[in-house]
Every structure is written in C-alpha cells, then in structure tokens.
Length: 144
Image (tube, rainbow, N blue to C red):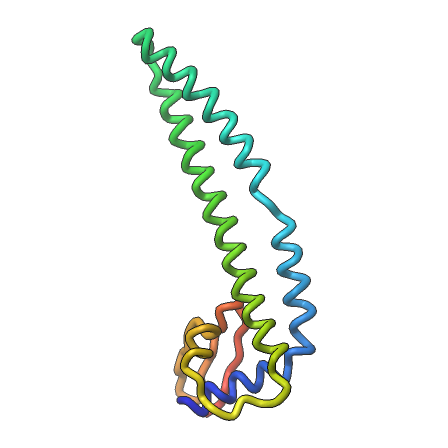
C-alpha cells in the first residue's frame, strides 16, 4: 500500500504541468462567485422582519407568517455561508496541493504519513487497482 501511495504522488508530480493551469482557472472562477451580496440582502430583510415581528407580537397580532419567513431566510443564509466556507476550504486544499507540487523537483521516494494525511482524502481498493482521491478533488489510479 505504501508503494502505491508513493506511485500516486509521483503520477501527480509527473502530470502537474497538464492539470495545474486548468485547476487554477476552475478555482478562480469558483471564487469569483460570491454569496456576500445575497447574505447582505438577507440580513437587511431579517432586520426589517424582526422589527415588524416585535410590533405585531406587542400588539398581540398574528405573526406566524413573519416567523416562517424569518426561519426560511435564516436557513437560506446558513446554506449560503456553508457554501462560501466550502469554497474557501477547497481553495485552501488546492493551494496546499499546488505548494506540494511546486516544491517537488524530483519523484517522491519514501512514504510520508503526514503528506498522506494532508493531501489524500480517501483511497478506494479495487480488485486490480487503487483509486486515490486527493483533498483538492483530483483523482488518480494505481494498477496493482
């Protein structure tokens, strides 16, 4: 298994000039999409709804619809923030992989547990090969 991990890293190193430009472009495009304007809109709407909710509650008027809308907006905001955090995490993992590849001037010769934990998300064993999924989303296979 250790030899297969070293082989997977070396395959990645050998092909870095082919996939790094595309990986960088894809990440730049993904980072251009920001949820910040929508989150700001939601915050403004939530503030207005909460003020209205207080008025209706103090006047003992029905406010169920307002409460439902507030809940819905909070959920949407949460989802947008999670999406934004996922994008930032993916960028960090891609940056780590890019830094690793930039540092490599030759093939990896020894198994490094720290490197495996830092860069590899999972390894799937098949009858004739191992599939390596890196945390950056890249995948490679090593025949057995």
